[in-house]
Length: 165
Image (cartoon, rainbow, N blue to C red; front, side):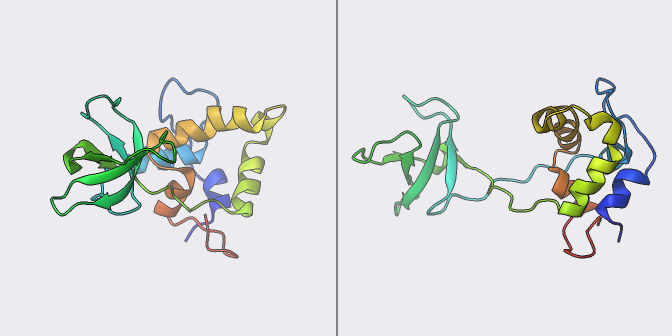
């Protein structure tokens, strides 16, 4: 198993996207070589699921809601994201609601952050966290269609002390 630290320093440089010319360290090679994760089909809506609406009259596509009930006929009872306390639930066919994926709970270790800082030292000078996120982390994640933590997990890079990327 490799460490997250070695991932940033020991791999050859490959352009993932020609338009991103700022920094091309080994993580780009990994993202490019592994390719994007295949899209996963959405899970069926269950009590407590968060969903996105589509094709529901009087509601914009993409409106968010929480499933607060499922009828015997399979219709979903929803509380819209902008609902007030006294608003009646909205009933829709399950075909008009796509379950949103759970928010990932994984992340990277402090060792990974330190290795990232060391590998990008010359680039990070005078940059804010937001600037680094926009110009380095997000393009890597978009290329891999996965978070940086997911990408590091896919290649088995982990901090020996924590087991996390």
